[in-house]
Image (tube, rainbow, N blue to C red; front, side):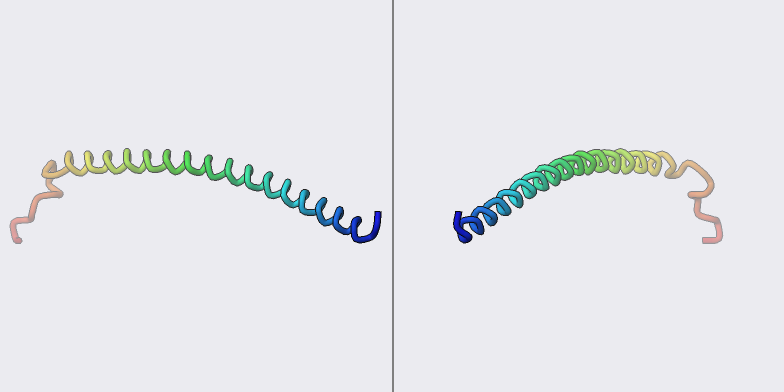
Length: 74
């Protein structure tokens, strides 16, 4: 092989190596993003449950005790 052919072969092999690395990185990032998507869905569900629970607590506590009464001097 001539020097220019060897150079081209080396460049093609380097490009193939880079493409393989990028494919692996892409698959890895895709897995991470999918996992994070599931975690976000779970966190949203938990926030919704906590919000509903706080509303229930607030509604059940309204007017239920002396701490909610206005003092007579007001």
